[in-house]
Length: 128
Ligand SMILES: [Zn+2]
Image 1 (cartoon, rainbow, N blue to C red):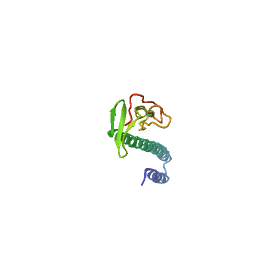
Image 2 (cartoon, rainbow, N blue to C red):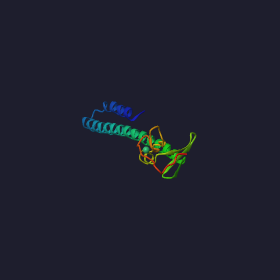
Image 3 (cartoon, rainbow, N blue to C red):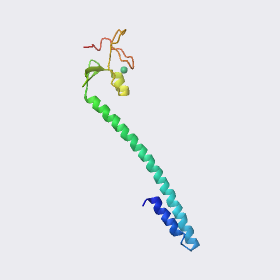
């Protein structure tokens, strides 16, 4: 039996009280208990939402930590080593967004650069 059902049961019992003063007092306390119960249920919903957000943040942080285990820092860039091999990662995007954006030299580019933030790595990063 939940708290709401229990309070409804008390309300039914109060109907059997014949003393008007006692009945009024019991009804006032019952209403107060129902209001408190409703507030607790609302707070419970808020806490559930907050718990979901914290779980999502923990999952994201764990993923980020897992990625960082595979990173090394050299020549002012990060190198990510995983199933796809070793590749240079943009340090600016990693530090600001936690994103692992590979540094590339694409057709028309003079220097290796980050396709997301467009940071160039002239003289710092030498593609292997
Ligand atoms: Zn970048």
